[in-house]
Length: 205
Image (cartoon, rainbow, N blue to C red; front, side):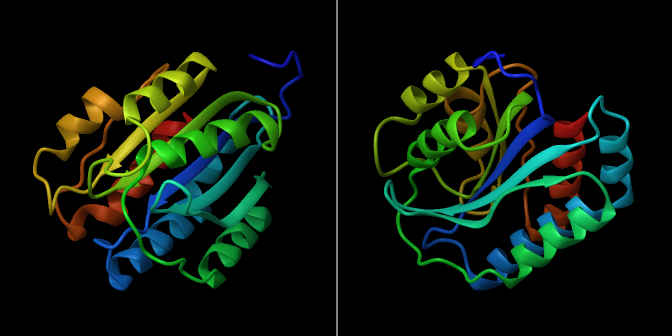
């Protein structure tokens, strides 16, 4: 682990969720509710309790343009039902930021920097990207990914395939990376909430 600091949490995990112009208000509401529900679910809390510290640092960033990222939930330590419920409450109460283009590279760069400088020292650092489109703003996404992976960060992806049926292939080739990285595609909104739950369990395991 970089920084030579003892881990305060088992994982520092940032949910980086696309709020670009292609994402409707209804879809964004599903993203928010899906993550709020997943963090408070008994299965997640049981998995967290079985880890060495029993603690995770979680943040939620909504993003679009290269220079447009907003924390809906700043870094908070979740270590049981009460802190999980408070994390979910803050997320549900947050206003949606304005829409824009799709800069996956921009949000990777922001999360990379904040995982190293702002998040609590962690045994594992993970960026969890949810998006329904390809990088079309900012620097090439591969460059941002490679820099994050070189710093010991894992990037996972949940591509929503309704607008681009091959987006999962793009994520696998250009977006995800690092130890135990994965792509979990979602074909339509019907599978979205279950996919969010499953990806969080995989990231904690």
